[in-house]
Image (cartoon, rainbow, N blue to C red):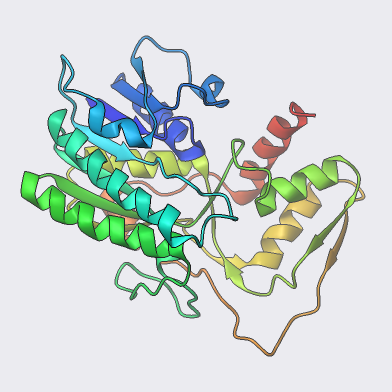
Length: 301
C-alpha cells in the first residue's frame, strides 16, 4: 500500500503515518519545509518527504510510483484568532480541491478529508453521521464546504470519498492551548488550574487510536460517506478533568459556577458506524492516554 499524507507533521497526520509504517507501507509525506515539527516524523526509508505548502499542492506533479489513498489533514489559519475569518478560511476550500486533483494525478483510489466537529455547530443532542450540520464559525463553514465540494470532485474521478468529522483528539503532540495540555502543564508546574463548570458531556480520543481508525477507513473497503472520529463513550467534561487531577499529587484546581441561563452544549457522539466500517475500537483509556501525555510533556520543560 502506498499512501499520501498532507499535514504530515500534525498530530493526527503523524499518527496515520505510524499506522501505515507498521504495515510496511510507503508514504509520501507532504509538509512545509520550514515546519518546526519535522522531527516528529519517524525515521524510515519508507517515507518520502515532499516539501510544499498548501498553495503549492497544485504544482506537485505525478510521481514515478502511483499511490492508493490520499489523507488530507493540512489546513491553514487554524489559530483561534483566524478561525472566524471567512476570507482566510475560504482559501482552504480551494486548497482541498487542489488536493483532490493531486490525488487523481497520483493515481489514488480513495480521498480522506479531515473535517471537524465544528461542522455541527452547537448541539445538545447525541451526534450521529446523520445529524444536520449547522456551523456557526467560518472554520466550520469552510470545513463543511470543502467536504461537500471535494466529494463532488471525487465523484467525477470515481474516487472513494471518506469525510471525517473529528472530535476532541488528544495526545503528546497536541497544542499547548488544549484542555489536556493546559491541565498537565499547569499541574507539572505545581500551579492551580482553572476550569469552566465542565458540566457538559464531552468525548476524548487518543491520537494513536484516531490514526488507526482513519488509516483503516482510507485503505479498507469502507464505503464513501461521513465517519465520526471520537471515543467510544462520552462522559461529563468534569469527569475527564478529575481523571487528570487524580494523576498528580496535591493538584490544585478550581471550577467555575455553572451558568444555567444557557443550554449545555454537548459532544455526545455515536461512533458505531465508524467502528463497523473500520473494524477497530479505541483501545487507549483516557487515564492511560493522559499518562503518556504527562511523560512526553515532562521532556519539554
